[in-house]
Amino acid sequence: DGLGVRKEEGDYGFIELREGEWFVRRVYFSKNGELKGEIYNINTPVELYGTFIRYIDLEVDVVNGKLEDVDVLERRVEEGLIPPYLKEKALEVGRRLVEG
Image 1 (spheres, rainbow, N blue to C red):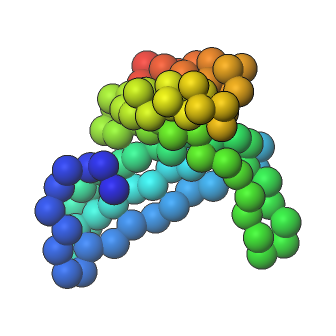
Image 2 (image 1 turned 120 degrees about the vertical axis):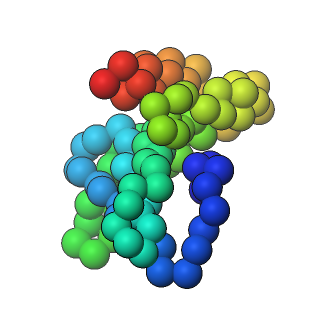
C-alpha cells in the first residue's frame, strides 16, 4: 500500500471518493484508532454510476505528504498508455496535495 508501516490484525481504513475529483483518499488506522497514514491516489475524475465507480489510476500517489511513483508515470507515458496532458494534470494535482 506504499505506507511502509506494519499491518496488524484489527487495522482498518477508509476510502473517500468524490465525484469529479482527481484523487481518491485512503486513510489507515490501527485497531486502537491511531492514524497509521494516508495515501492520495491520483486518477482521472471519479465517475459514479449508481453502485459503480469508475476512474483510471494515473500511477502517482501522495503518501504521507510526499509525491511518489513519478517514475512509474513517466514509463506509462513513454509506453503510450497515458497521454502527456494527463501526466501534467496528475503532477499538478499531486503537487497541490503535497502543498496542502
